[in-house]
Image 1 (cartoon, rainbow, N blue to C red):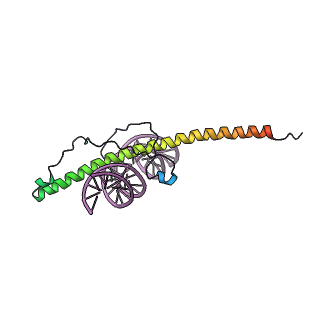
Image 2 (image 1 turned 30 degrees about the vertical axis):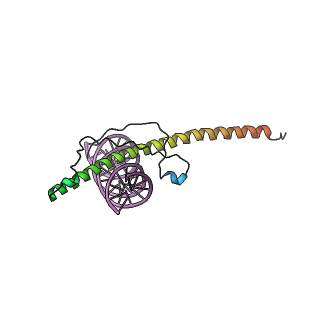
Image 3 (image 1 turned 90 degrees about the vertical axis):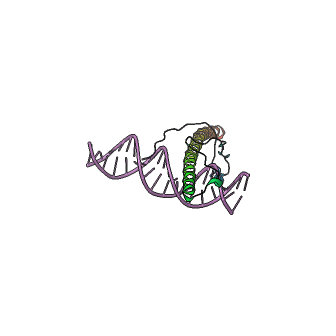
Length: 120
DNA sequence: CCCAGCAATCGTCACAAGCC
DNA sequence: GGCTTGTGACGATTGCTGGG
């Protein structure tokens, strides 16, 4: 298996584009980076017009496939990184809301105590 | 020490959606 | 319409852990 160990973190409020359809309340987390730079080792092919024999066509097909696999590999990594970030955001939001909820419940109990008629 | 079970991570494929 | 990109699904791999 190929070994890659480069994971980086960022702090952004993110929501998946089509996952959000389920809840409908989160902003999209799609932040498309401009894809101008090719990964290292990627060599641009000759223009299609310059391909003659089947050998060249096969090589071109292979090169295209490898390029696609490499891009998809990177896209998958990025996708997972964003999803992880999104889940982190949701979890911290849950934590905040739980604290908030607890405080409101306590406040409600206090108010109930104040407002309830004395029975003795 | 070995092994099974588990979670995390990865690469790939298939497909939908958007762009030109 | 073909191409590109994002992402869910799937299988493979790896590292960890508890039990025998």
